[in-house]
Image (cartoon, rainbow, N blue to C red; front, side, top):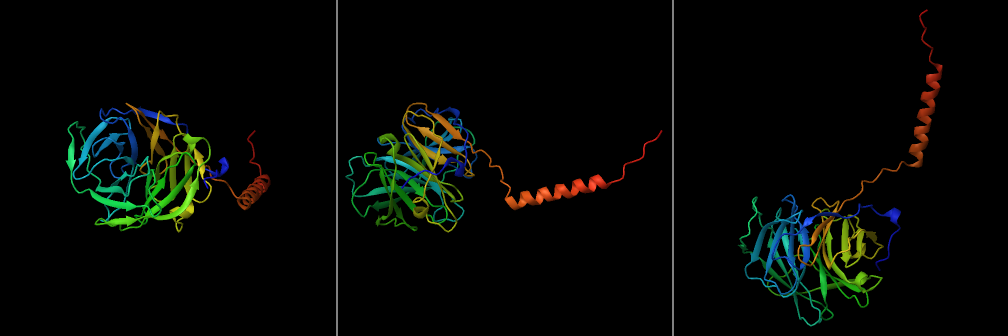
Length: 319
């Protein structure tokens, strides 16, 4: 259950900073977000259902760097995206989640895996066609679900889907273990249900991400953001069954996208709509807390120094 941890047990973040408005003409329903880990300042995003199979590389101030069309792919209802490892060591991949299903009627859903394109240094408005997108067909073990959240575990390359049910607030966490089958349909594994409280907008899960080191998991709804800490030996499912931290979230028109920064300390959000702002949330550096024994030791040292200073002979003064 997504119960909340006390504020003092959670990392602190500054209020959202508006970095600029999205200037990509064709990007009007931003539904997913991922941060490049090798190309500084590049954010990847895409439109919701009804668009062609394309992704946008934008800068953090919202300006368009390039648009890419995925050959052999289609966009039935793309709802989220992620970046993470894949078959080739040292290569980052984009994962595009065609998992939206408002009517809960799809027999299968699809995640497209694509080696991260190299973005040109100079901005271009001419769409670039890219090949190499692999289609990963997935099926729920318990019937169709609507979903808008995709997570990629950087340590295992497993895929996680968190379903959306704003009416009840119950989101199922499912996974497809690596290597996912690219020649047939893989049946997802159900791990647990996570209950989000509040009104329907606070309960509707719309996006998520896992930090590059894998130690934090980030999930958003329309009105709230949740952060889970994860130990090195802990699974994603186990970590998300513990209490979460509630993080700052800007009031957006229809906020569906969230992603960690490349180093994993900060995060970004993006909303649907024309020319939405790119928000950044910066982590407040933690202040080291001195243990009780360290305090006693420091007091002792200062006491000894004070005693020695009092015993030093005074220097003679000239007449």
